[in-house]
Amino acid sequence: MRFILVAVLLFSSVLSVAATAPDESVVIDATDNTYVVADVNAPDDPQGLREKNFGGLDFLKIWYASQVQAQEQIVSVGLVKFDLATLKDREVRSAHLQLFATRADLLQPVRLVDVSVADGVWSQSDVTFKTLPQISNPALATTAIYAANMWYSWDVTPAVVRKVKDGNVGYAIGLRTLESRGEEQVVFASTQAGRNAPRLLVTMSPAPASIPLYALPIGIVAAALVAFAGGMLIWRRRRAHRVSAVSEAGAVAVGRPLLEDLEDIEATVSCPACERLIPASAELCPRCGAEVHLERTASEPLLRR
Image 1: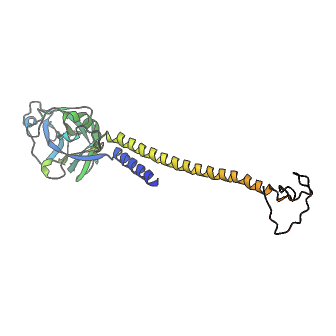
Image 2 (image 1 turned 180 degrees about the vertical axis):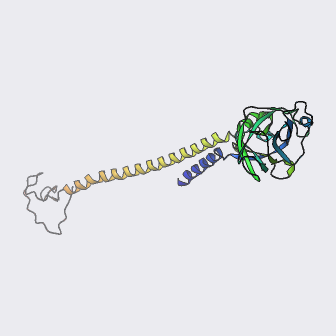
Image 3 (image 1 turned 45 degrees about the horizontal axis):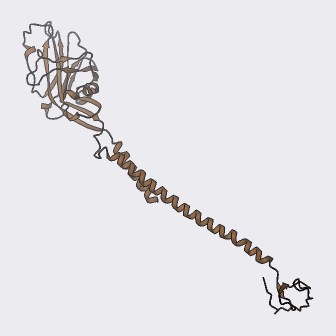
C-alpha cells in the first residue's frame, strides 16, 4: 500500500513540475544599428548631414554640439532594430534593451538617455535623418549614463509585447538634455564592433510542455483510479479482519454459558430398586419412592445426565 501511495505522489509531482516550469530567457542580437545626424538650425542643410548614412560603423554616436561653431545645432539619433521571430506564440514577461558604452563625454556627472519606439521601415545601410522613421513621444524608457566601459539597460517590455505580431521592433536613442554652447556624446558599441553589440534580453513564459495536453487529464484519472483501487484494497482487508474478530467474539460468547451449565450439573447415581438415575444426595428415589442407602466411596463412579 505504501508503494501505491508513493507512486501516486511521484506521478502528481511530475505533473506539477511539468505545469510549473521556470521562465525562459533569450538574448536577441540587433539586426540593424546605426545613427543619423542633422543641423536642426539649418533647414537647408548646407553640410549635407540630413542625407548622410552612417551605417556600417563599429559605434553608435549619441551626440549633440550646440553653437560650438556659429549657430549650428547638430544632433544625432541612434537607431537599433531587432528581429522578434523567436518570440512568436510566446508570452513575453519582460524585455530590456542593453547597450555597452565605450565613451561618455559629459558636461555633467550624469545624463539621461531616452529610448523611444521607431515605427517604420528602415535599414542601417540606407537610413538617413531625412528618412528617419517616426519616433514615438513620450519616451518609452530612460536610463542615467555616467561612465564608459559598462552596460546600460532600458525596460522596453511594452514595445516588445506590442510588436511581436509585426516580427520586429526598432528603437531610437537620444540624449534628453541639450545645453547651449556645449557638446556632449555617449558612444555605444555596434554590431560591427565584434563584441558588446546591442542586444535585447527577453524573459518568456515556459514553452508548452513536451507532455501533450490530453495526457494531463488522463494522468489525473489514472492516479485517481490507482488511489481508488488502493482504498478498496484497504477496505476489504479491514472488513475481513472485522468479520474474523466478530466470529471469535461470538465463539467466546457462545462457549461461556455452556461451561457455566456444566458447572451447574449435579452428580447422579443409580437407584438400587428401579435402577434409574437419581440425585446422589437424594434419600428417597423420586421415581419409585424406595429408600436409598448408598455408601459413596472415592472410587464410586459419578453419573451425569
